[in-house]
Amino acid sequence: MFNLEQFRDIAFRRSPQPVHPLRSLADAQKAVAELPAHDHVAALGELTSLAKTMNETDTFASERRARILFILDEAARERWRALSGQYLAPAGRPLAKDGDINILRAFFDSASEFVDGLAIVLDHGDGEKSAWMKENLARINMRSMRWLGRRLALAHMLHLPVIGAMWEKIHRRHRLAEEANVARIALPVFEGNRFPTSVRQEYVRCLLLELAAPDSMTGREVELCFRITGRAAPAVKLDNARSDSTVFAVIPAGDGLPMLARQLESGLASSAYFLDTTLCLPKLRAGLERDMDRPKDEPDTLFSSEYTIGERYAMLNRLISHW
Image (cartoon, one colour):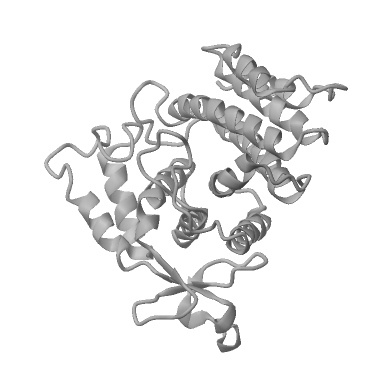
């Protein structure tokens, strides 16, 4: 059982110190190296605490804040992977039902601090124009959008009444990235990633998740859907004009959610984005043609052994019907 009280005690019940312990990149690297190797509750709590107390400290220059957050972000990913495994397959095999909800609650708390930290870098910085900030502006925006997407998925998994507020942030981040001319730059969001992404692609990923009607899914289904959207998003065309193959649209402002394009009021068409998901369908169908002769209760080979082949088939069929 995930100890949520221990996590929140470490993450949130410390008073800010007069001088933040992470004064340099070396301090951040040392803090990460000293995290307990096998106590993921304590480690994630400590990383969340460091991000939270940074958010409460206004003495960080933008570059230093961003670079330290990158270090904490990389370390958090490792803990998230381990804890995701505990949620989805606690005994080493797919659980086939939702796991410990306290893991999701801790994830949501942690994601919120990283979302806020990257927003401070991008929206409330000191106007610093260092070479590093210019070179990494696209990646900072990508990390921000990736955390926003992850937080959106968690909000659906937990059935929290914050979806509208989340979409305000997602639309705003995409708009500001477009205005800064970094929304369409394709890069690996993390060093070592096999495939590049972009702010625009992460934005599309959020739209695809919403189109799949996640409110009617279980927590583990939302997570599987989010993983599949990451593979499908590059095939989506997002344009300002409607085409013959356009099915969906979204007003990219406020708490606007994607909808059928035919439902869009005519007076709003000029301010809408239109989504063409046609090329997603071959990708989804290809996933249905894999492992056809294997038992459906065996671990999945495409999206993680934490799911079964049967779960993959069910989700792909759902997405084909929704997209």
